[in-house]
Image (cartoon, rainbow, N blue to C red; front, side, top):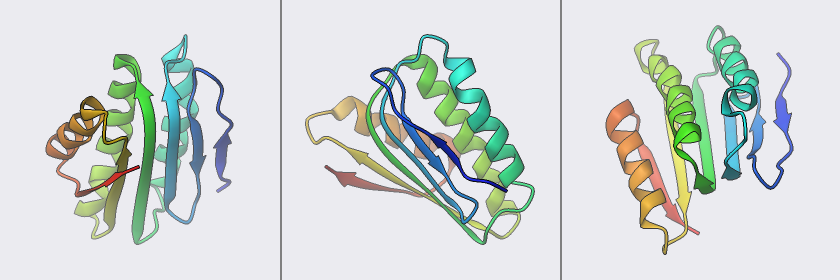
Length: 123
């Protein structure tokens, strides 16, 4: 399985997904066509889940998420939830600006919805 690297633009995230189990998302996400942007990410995660590592770490260093992007990132996280039922570990690092309570609250909501443990870090 090959890594998936997507370079950032002014409207899209930097994405680095590696077969060793590190999935990183950083920057702003407000792509004009959110489904087109996220489809390769969802496809990659689906392939990864066929043969996941013992531990999967998701690192989110997000500056801004529009509503559509938020839903698709949650979709990715929900897919990772099944790892626990297979005896694997999934953890999330949620980095946020201390002045951005909305982004912190999004992480708290995602943790509650997915049931995955989140570690919160102020940038």
